[in-house]
Image 1 (cartoon, rainbow, N blue to C red):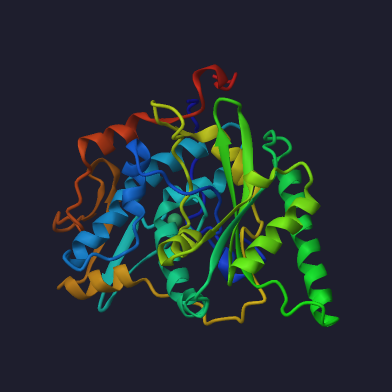
Image 2 (cartoon, rainbow, N blue to C red):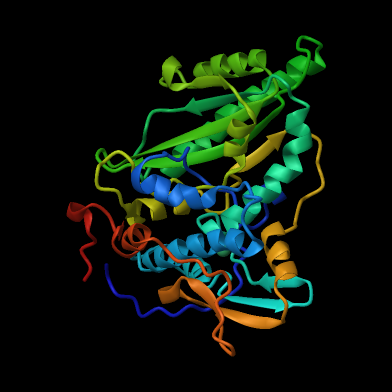
Length: 361
Ligand SMILES: [Zn+2]
């Protein structure tokens, strides 16, 4: 990886401009695998609080994703000619300082879609915010809509076409509803994701949708294939959504790890292509769902603040994978990465496959 002399410039980074609250952390990419290194990463994004653990132990999960995210942010910030270098540095500094004062434990969070620290917080908020809506859909279904894979250069245009095609369906259903030819408009939650295939070096943009019932799911799949005749029927998936599947939609988890090979890596160059292509775009949207009150709490931090007795300032130390009170030397979470996870973080974040290194030194 080329060395960069670029210095971080700004600790604040509201990067998703002009978009709705759902998109503050909008993200890409698919369902995490449960095997190998992917599981190593995914384990840390589990949002369910474990009642057996103390607030400190639960906050240790944030330390674990901070440990991975900081290493990844440095790598992304060193991708040559990226349009997002400044934002990647903001992620490097995400929650570096945490201040415990009174009943609060606060820090500056980058809110970038690739930041796993912010992803955990935002996902938990969305699950809480949309729980009443999802509970009112007893027959909810997940729909996956795809188009044929494309090159990195064509990714932004392909995503634009997908959004355009979906909008045509939405508008046509709205018109039919107005003419009383259809019982309701299109009601859905939609997430855009993109994955990279390292062998073919192409990209797979797709939508995951949550809809209230099976009939809507099937109609949507049929309408999509009319919009995109080159898309295959069996590429479009419809399945019943249990609560866990619904939560997948809110999981702002980036499929960082390539799971198709035995050797698992986080490949920075294709990730940068994906993040650039979706930069500034809404990747999470709701359609004809009433606005619910935005959830802004950080329950993990609140719980830990309640458990800490004294006020203090904690600073992140990557080598120790924890926040440290510089005055007392006390660690905040007592999280210790496993040797396997440390080795993954320190050696499996690569620019790209070896034959695709940048030509610059
Ligand atoms: Zn962040």
